[in-house]
Length: 52
Image (cartoon, rainbow, N blue to C red; front, side, top):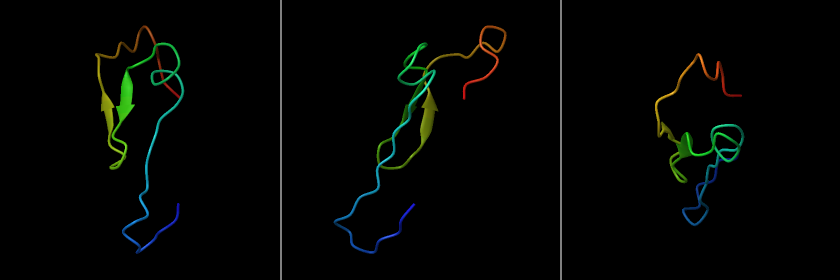
């Protein structure tokens, strides 16, 4: 990670992997400029024990 005091430089975030852009897709989304990760659907631990 890099820190910059120049306001014209923007840090953006993205997420990849199972639950994001791989099956099952769309479970997790990330806010591009804040990095907040959101869960869009209920997760079933018995169906999928973990997402890495």
